[in-house]
Every structure is written in structure tokens, then in C-alpha cells.
Length: 479
Image (cartoon, rainbow, N blue to C red; front, top):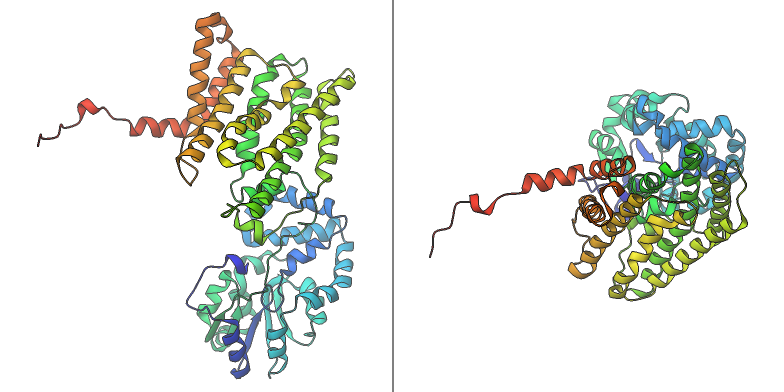
């Protein structure tokens, strides 16, 4: 990806690269993706898959299983992705061949292409993209006669070895050492270091676009734009929110398996709508704030954010959740109305929150966290100790936000898991004193305490390790 490639001693401007192409008389090796072709051929191929939602589901399944762990790691990820599309959606290759002309017209690097056509001998196109994909694309770009060195689709070694090994095998080490290489990628630094004339060029119109970003998928905006690289849905939603939903209520469920499945469906329904608040938050910040805090991915790699599809997903998953939660009986109509009311209220509260000043948001934020932590209680009963745990969970989210808004520009290191543990123990202790210890000395309380302590284990250990006694320190000499 050109946007993410690190700076190197081989960097040069596009103008200097074009001049070097015109002057060079020997072997010229030109990268394809985000260089001669201003997009990524592999991502564009996968993006051609129809229906897109099925293709996106397959890609999500692969990312969950990560089979490339056993075939050479991340470099072989694209081989798995393309193979799966080719095997399960074989018509995609035909669709790709039909669309390459339009892709070539829109995304050929015309200044570089013109410079390459004007010289002799013809350049060699070097890419770790896949030969069946890049061959029709290059033909549509006007380079049907150019020699191409690319990865074979059903051989992991080509991707695992990288472009330098691929070229050395095809041309020999001596030819690579005498060549000029033009590439944008930080992954090609070994190749650039091995050649006679290395030129790493980031072209201003080059963009990396993730495949199937046109297809809506719940939590995609959260994962790729709002919290990129944090695995936030797994850590912050499944382990925290859903973990407390489950532990606060499962002991009261007549059918625990149905209960777990129903709550998971309900979680997806809720987050399809709650995520719209994050989308709106970023859009409002972009339009009205002087210094909006937006991730780089917000500008670089957009995600589908339709207005109505999230509501369709929320309605479908919400209805399925209610049916499962009420098995083996039938749900009353009031259940659907209650859940719809929660989704609508959370959505409009988030929109109002996004449109008020930041000091006022501090006092509106707990209501959002109440929705996140407790929306399910309109359909599911919870225990007393579950109420205590959800309250502690809410405070663990609000306290860091309060400190952030009134204490500085950056999100503070406030140890939220430890805050939750402290609040849980203190509130549970207060209830034990007020209504008797039996209220909190039970198996649900033990499960919640153990989970809360487990989540706080690192923060707790850090707090204990950094603690010291003032009366044991060496006293200072009086002045």
C-alpha cells in the first residue's frame, strides 16, 4: 500500500522517476499495483465478485480462521482469498475480464504508461499479484506484449518468497542487479536494495481500496474506521459488553443455550444501530469542528455507510433474537415494540449527543453507556448482582471519558478494567451491608467477580507493582 509504505533512501518524486525512465537504456522493472495501475489488482478482482455480500461473508470467515498461519503467514493471505473466490464463485473471473477495460481506463497511471511506451526495450512488469488477474488487466491497459513476472495462483511459494525471489528465479540475480526498479511499496525494499537503480515513487493518485467496501456489514465502520487495528469489537464489545450481558442474566434463563444464542443475535441488532452513531459522530466532526479527531482510515479507505440497511439488519437480527429468547413459546408483540423503542431511543440520543458541545456531552455520555451495557434488559431479566456488575461496567466507561473531557487532549490511561473491579466490589459490599450478604454471596456473583478480576488482572498487577509506602522511603534532609 503506497499510503502506508515507510520512507526510505530510495524515495524520489514522480517527475524524477519519469525522467529516469526516459534516460534509462537497460532492463526496467516496473511494479503494477499502485504504480502502473493506480489501484490494487487483487482487491479490485475480489471486489468484482457478485453477490458482494456473499463474497464479503467468505472474506470474513477467512479472516476469522486465518489459514495463512500455516502457509507462510500474511504474505499468503491474498492467495487464500483469491482461491476461495475462484473456487466458490467461479463466475468472478469472467466478470473481471469484462470489467478490466473500465478499470484500465479509470486507473492506468497515464504519465508513467506514456513514458514506458516511448522507450525501448519494453519494460518488464513485476508484481506479486496473480497472473490470471493481471494478464487481462495489462492487456486492457495497452501492455499486452509486455513480459510479466507475477505470482501463480495455486503456489504459495511465490507469495511467500516475495518479489525479489520471484524475479531472481525468472531473470537471474545478475539481471536484477543491473536493472532499474520502480515501485511504491515498502515491501519491495529488498528488491530496491538489490538493483542498480532503485526508485521508490508514491504516485499522488494511487489509492489502496479494500475489496467489497461498497457492501454494508455491521461493525465494519467500527473495526476499520473508528477503531482501526484495535480488534475493538472482540475486546470492547464481545468480551466486555456481551460478557456482562451474559453473566448478568444467564442464571435466570430456563434454556441457557437459547439464551446465549438470542443474546448474541440481539447484540448484532443493537450494534447495527449504535454504530450509526459513530458514523454520524465523524461526519458532524468533519463538518463543524475546527480540529476533528478522525482516523487516517476515514479519509483513506472508506466503508459503506448506508442509511437504511443497518435498520434492516437490526430488524432482522432483533426479530430472530426475540424468537430464540422466547423458545419454545411464541413472543408477544410487545417484545418487538420494546426492542424497537430501545433502538430508536439510542439512535436519536447518539445523534443529539453528536450535536452538542463537548462539555455537555460529558453528562449525556452515561446514557449512551447505559444503552450499551443494559439495552437487553427490556427483554431479559437480570439478577441483583448482575445489576451491580452492569452499573460498575457503566462507571468504568464514564470515568475515563470524564477525565478525557476535563483533563486533557488525549485519552487518559485510567485503567478502566480496574475501575470496574473497584466499583463492583464496593457496590456489592454496600448491598451486602444493606440487605444481607446472601444477596451477593452466590454463584452468579462469584462468576461476575472472577470475570471482572480476570479482565483487570494486568491493571491490578501494575497497580500493586507500582505501589510503595511513603513511611519506608528515605526521608529528605531538611534545608
